[in-house]
Image 1 (tube, rainbow, N blue to C red):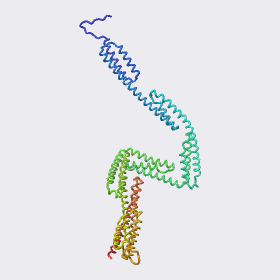
Image 2: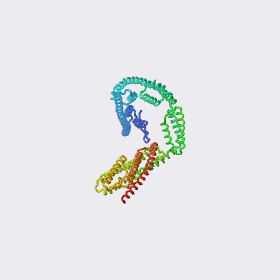
Image 3: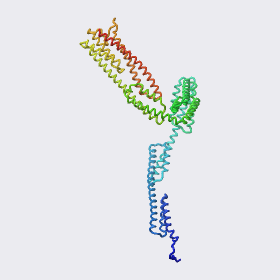
Image 4: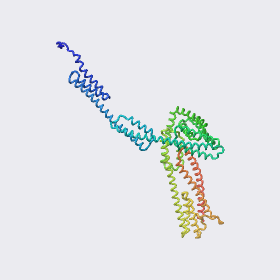
Length: 577
């Protein structure tokens, strides 16, 4: 058909073909935008190839516009190719990682085979499942399968042999347990009214029970039967023991009373207004119950039901007031932190270590405070204990210093003894007498010496004085002088009064030394006792003994001062004569 020329002056309208030409290419561009997000890489590549074919078959349009639209398709294909490349790179990395994982599994299986651990059935089954489930894999993984299967076959072969040995061992164990049962039954049958050595039977029972535990497991089909026989035999023996052994009945009665006491205490605790304290006490009671001795089963069930009822009631109250408990625990924590600061400050004060009751007071304050939040219990206790340990370390150092002073006192006394011995041969005995009396005064004023040397150094001192005064009397220049510093004779051949007083002073000093050493030992022992419930009771007992000993020491020292004054008066009287 011949085309008609448009009329002059009339508006030219675009044809339908011209309207559809740009739309054709924009549709292809839109399709490319959809294809670039595909993850089916093979299909996506084919679709982009189809787009190029359709593009080449499309209608004619402006070349510049066509190039612009085609650039969009190329950009979409580029994004698709980059995503596909990144995916395959990740896949290759994953395959390499999976290859290494399978190598590790092969190594684990190889180790089990080399170590001949034929009983690790579950371990091998787990390795096998993991090995088979690992995907994807690179081509070189083909060599792993044969190696893994060879190891698996070797394990399975030895597994059968192992199972046979296990079965044989279970049969052997069954015979062993049946033999123990026979012995237990014989002992249970022999027990009765005529039994006198229940302790011996108990020991035999315990020995057999230990043998029972050492014997391995038996075949599953016989395990329950054998165990029930064992329990029944033990119960039969216990029943006879309960019937015929008065001491055992008394022990069970004691345990029953102990559990009754725990129940009574639990009733008191649930009335406690400080729920934080009550919570801690209930936990302590629960531990005491667990640690209490055995009771007959019928009483055990009944007692437990009563205790459990109280415990469950308290649990309800505790749950309802948990905020109050936590607030109270926080208050206790703050108080204990303040006590830690106090202990740390005291540890830095030199004079605190000489006060025997400082540590005791700190412990008492600590124990009078209630529980703290559980997560803070160890932290705050460690801080307090560190400060207490510092005090105790200083205190032990103080006692060490006292012992050092005692050693120095011992040396001073020995020096005096040596000087008196040397003066026993002096030419001028009158002058020597003056020196000896001064030394005797100095000797009496020197403090304590180590207790194991006090008798020895005193004997050495007496021997030196006896030698000096013997020589003095032989020279005819000190006939009226006493052996230990002078003194008037009471006449009639009686012991000189000065010597009597010196003997009395020696006796008192000996007793005082012994008491003082006891106090030091008690004080030293206290520093090693932990402040738990039993430790606090022991510390209180030691403190009572220390106080009693200190009273005795004070009395002895007062007597010693009195005797020293009498000796001084006696010596002054000698000089005036």
